[in-house]
Image (cartoon, rainbow, N blue to C red):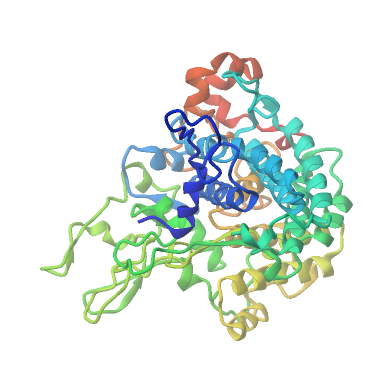
Length: 544
């Protein structure tokens, strides 16, 4: 089932469409020059969101938020930290083929009519796409990606790309602050992300600056004040967040693709023990006390199913350091005639709601996840993320009281975005399940809550790498001083890429398109790109 927002992608299919002996342009027919700014922007946003959220699902497998039922396929390989050239493809293809090449035409069309707000939005999309993929892959074509006739563009290192995109974000802010010409379409006519709110786009640009600048925590030129300055102009409230709303075709009920994560996670995704441990405060040093309150997000993020007696039972959890991921859990089917399952691994419940629309008498096979439900949302850049970045920076600066306030604000914001009852939220925030004393707040507390709030986001992996997972300075697992408590190497680690116990995933594989058709430029940029150990080679900001 296709989503209605993707109907807008029709405008992206530009063909020559010249009729016999018709030597003039037909303004009613789509081609590379006719579409207007308000027609061009929606498919760019939609295709970007597709690639971005697909990258986030891949990260969720690497980051041990998700496990999968056993099958020797791309997703299972990702759970053992093996990103092969095939699993690396879609975020790359979605960006370069479907999105990036259409951004300059949007800018050109917008400048013709003085639609400066569209110019600003286009530059933000360009900076965002290249920025997150440079962090994802470590290197990529930037300068030469759209040079006409050049089928083998050179690769640019992520450090260079970040320099370029930060400047681009500044340009975008300037464009968005301009008054549009009277000939220009209002931004609301083509904005399916922020509904024409120019202020939200400006805040998005500053939020991206804060995100990218905060990646530099290992570098000598890391500037916490620059991060705080960007945060001051970034989203401050939840309605200033950039959240994309997915919409199903009306009238379609069964097998509905309720959100991009519904498609991405599929019916094989399973919840890990680590993810549940973080939600339930079951880790070393977690907040605890006599007034503990269960996190109200648990039931929305962790699926359950009904047993034969009709009682909802929470899914069993996949311990990635156990032997289970080597060959299981197994996929299963439900046999309605006997009200039973095909095998015992049915206790590992899928993340898709099943039935999608329960009727009286139906057995609930899965309550699903908030991220895969009908009317689902893509939390692309949120106030919650900004607050957790602020909490981290404040704590680094020794401003523990301000850090505590930002940490609690980040939790509150994520719960509000999930539409959790405000009274339940405040009850949880005022309980011993949340740090209440600023002197007790640690970086681990902040980053684990951010890990939850950014579920299935590419940014989770940036944080894991910056924080060195749960290791000491040597790279060895150390739960006492490590940040992500309990995050261990999976039992089925791809040892060809991670031969040592101190090896951890640091970058994604180069996609097959480049390996097959542009290998000389790939090897010129990094001679190790054809070696398995390339995957544990830190990207530029992941090095001192």
